[in-house]
Image (cartoon, rainbow, N blue to C red; front, side, top):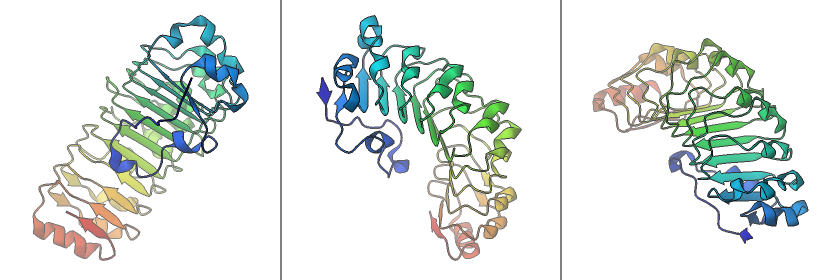
Length: 287
């Protein structure tokens, strides 16, 4: 069975201006298969597979056909009633994009690195208490998105093991525990999003990320922008929308590359906003 309608992404659209990798990693116009059996019949051209509901993943005969999907590049699993990833999918070595939505995954295999072509990982409505170690072992991972995890999420010291090609981390609607010191070693990171993560302060482990060009900390509980922000001179986009910020440090003047500073939805005095704009004459300050 084939379907041609793309599923909508379930995370905030303001950071989704670019097309989803789901649409771009496979050859243009490639079909979206809705079950394993149909995809296996045309395995050489089965580039995208979107499985919804639990019936297919409970069918051992269909799971046995996964090994034939040697061309599969994009896989979506939605609302399948699983808490563990079926191990058969680890044999899909051509996979570039993987997404799971509505599955209360509690862990992922340590052998996740078998997906040695995977660049994009998107997980929504999971039940992790710690970022699975297997994620750090994905050798070509470029982007990782986590949305709506039901528990407080913790990064371990293994975060430093993310590959050099890892440039984008996006976390939405998830309470984040204190970041480990090793987080500061992600020098290759260029985009970091922490949206509705109940942050009361900007984590100190973020400031040494001098390669970061985009930082989104919207809809948290931040009250100040501290002087340490001056370390992040690579920033071009800083979004602090929807917080409780009343003051921005004068040290923000050192962010010479900043193009946009978004302060909308904060209880700042308009005069203080004008001061910030004067400190950043070449930056667009949104308020």
